[in-house]
Length: 80
Image 1 (cartoon, rainbow, N blue to C red):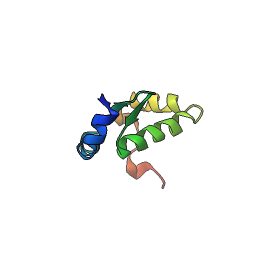
Image 2: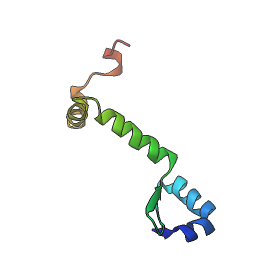
Image 3: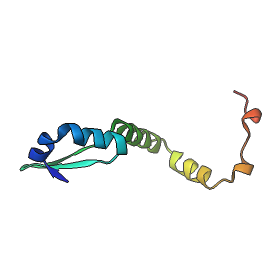
Image 4: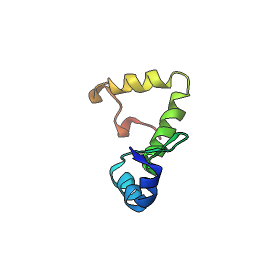
C-alpha cells in the first residue's frame, strides 16, 4: 500500500515492479483508494469474468480440473 504522493514520486519503479511481478499496488488518497494491476492480470480477470458469466461454465471448468488426463481425448482424437 502506498500514498498517491509516494506513488507519484516512484511511478516508474512501481509500474515496472507491477508489470514484472504481477504484484498489485494499492494507492491511498484522501477521498478513496485505487489499485494498479498489470495488463496481464487485468486480462486474466476479464477472461475469468467473461467465462463465469456463461451459464454452467463454472461447473464445467471445475469438473475439467478434477478429470484425470487419461480420461480426456488426445489431440489426435479431436476433429478440428
